[in-house]
Amino acid sequence: KALTPDRVKELKQNEDIIQLLYIAEQYLGKTLTPTETRKILFFYDELHMSVDLIDYLIEYCVSKGSKDIHYIKKVAFSWHEAGIDTVTRAKQETTTYHRNYFSILKAFGISNRNPIQSEIHMIDHWMKDYGFTMDILTEACSRTVASTGKANFRYADRILSGWKDKGVRHLTDIQALDTLHKQLQSDRQEQKQRQEQKGIRPSGSGNRFNNFQQRNYDYDQLENQLLK
Image (cartoon, rainbow, N blue to C red; front, side):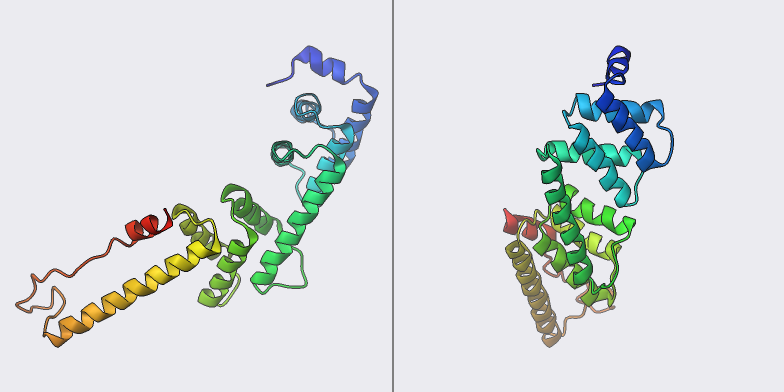
């Protein structure tokens, strides 16, 4: 909920808040707008974040290359939902995320550089929105490099999006999908060979067997059944 004008006025008379808003301006490199001020006060009054934690929150977001208050708010809510209520816990959490960023870059074969902002946003999307663990993410990155020969975040996202739609939660789910896919490919190949042995050509070839109906598989349905 939004803070009332009276509550905003009251908070801005608090010495700790005055100092916090001053520090925030130093981090962001500008005078705070009324909207930015209200959001920072919201972190303190409604999310019950301490002044020190808000200080570290802004420092952390700026260190990642973002001075946007909407991004800072997003991080604040994610910390609140995760129960992060001290600077120590926040540092532990951000250190873990930093390790994850570099693990993803390593899986892509990238070394000797930090992740750029667009890569950070994509990795955050995979971890937070898709809810995938690192073993699944690195598997998608490895498959991306094997298929495309390079680090391609968009290609990896298509893989992960497909796995999310199919309800993948563990590496064993991916292995089960791989097994199913190989079995269906083998069945199709055997079917094709049997048809060729019988002189049956594919529909549309002009052969008198044009009306022959091949057995079709609903691959997506089989995958969904497999993971239930």
